[in-house]
Every structure is written in structure tokens, then in C-alpha cells.
Length: 200
Image 1 (cartoon, rainbow, N blue to C red):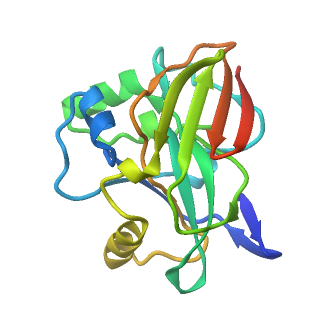
Image 2: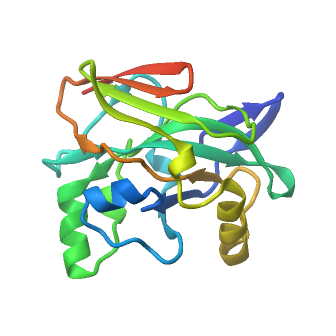
Image 3: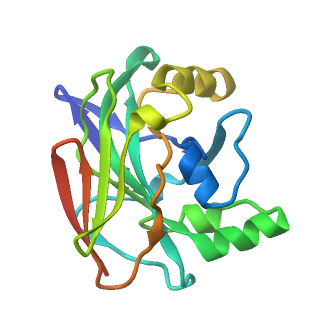
């Protein structure tokens, strides 16, 4: 289990809550309808990966990057830390599941589908997300375009699921998602922090 240390206190990551369609432009680019409430799905804890290597699953020919602000919940259901993350999505598998009315787990929860950067103490402000692939800018947007505030998401999830210390919230992706290929070089950024990644 992945453990995050904030101010020398350990927080083993528990549930991974993911918010879909939280940016209007991204919702439109995939041809989806704007939701009337947060669209929530989960990733298994075992999907977490850190470091500089992304491994694509062999069952998909169309894995997309989705760059997201990730929030860590501490004691008293407070947001205590943040980082940037990648919600890797087997888009071809997801499209098939959606067409059949099936869950998205295979498309969103495979090994390595949740890449996380380094968590830092949270400050309540907007964050800037950036992703380049082979030096081409793919995603470059601010969290001020999110349809939901951070506090609203915490309250919404807590009222339904009773969030706990160690839970993380992947808050959704802005526009610009796209396909990854073996050998791609990525730079994932949040504000002034950059993380170089290579697709294996």
C-alpha cells in the first residue's frame, strides 16, 4: 500500500475517488453530456504507480492520458495535501463498456492506471496543470475551470461514502486528453513542479 508522509505523519492511501466530467470543455471533447451531479468512480489501490515509468496494458490499443489535481484527505475530513496525477484510461475498453452499460473498472483500474506525483501541503487556491508529450503541449489549464469547488467535492463524497483519512480524490481532467504510445516522453506539471515520465 502506498503511504504519503505529510509533516512527518504517515497516511496510507485508502480509497481512490475519481471525479469524471468535472471540466465542461473535456466533457464536450469526448461527446458526453454535462452531469447534474459529480460522476464518481473508483480505482483500486493497487493501480497506483510512482516514479518515471508508465506501462501500457496489453489489452488496449488506445490508452489516454488525463492530467488531474489530486487531493489527500487527513484527519477531520480536511484536505491536507495535493499533487498532480494521471488517470490513465483504456479509451477503447471504456467505450465498449459504456455502450454495453458495464462498469469501467478494466478501463480505469488496471495496473499502473493511477500515476501520482509527490504530495505537498495543501493551500486553498487554484492550481495550474500542464502535460507535454514529446515536447508537444497536450494539456495546459487551470483548476479554476472545474465545475465543483474542492469543499463541495469533499462534502459530496463524505455525505455518500464517509470519506476517511488517507483517501484521495482525483478531481478530473481538463481538455486535451489524448493517446499515448510506447516510447513517448512526458512532462507532467502542476504549477512549477515538473515530473519527467517515459511510456514503456
